[in-house]
Length: 170
Image 1 (tube, rainbow, N blue to C red):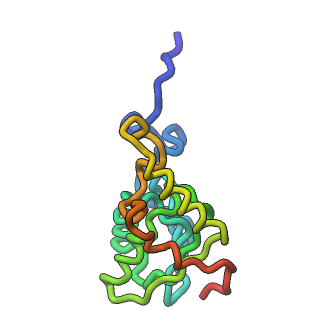
Image 2 (image 1 turned 135 degrees about the vertical axis):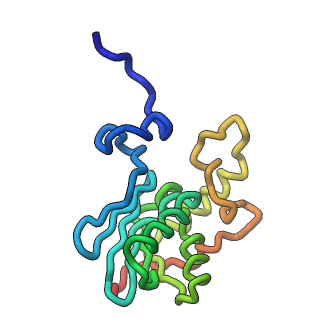
């Protein structure tokens, strides 16, 4: 007799092997190859050693970004984060930018460049509008997990910090 199917979430996936935990895998980070780090954080983060700077692909969800940065610093790379690239604008991939800005400032590093599709700021504006309409009955919606910087009463600190064209990275 087969085991009944169960819902998979972070708690249920905690002790499962990586391949069974799927998107809920939050295990240890991995050095993929010299200079390339994979940091699982629901929306995964990749970091590339570019010598005098680190290139970060996606930031994870804002609540998870400080853990990702701590792991990166404790186990892999010390160079300043020079560039952050957003692959797309979902909250789980692109709301950790402020944590990276804060981290860089606290270290005395220069402010990283953020590269994204030119439509990403409009998506963030849409998230702010949706967040204003989010109630406790929709607590599981993605807009209820927006970081405080996306509050409709506060301007997004990242909103004006995007470049619309990719430039040569270090």
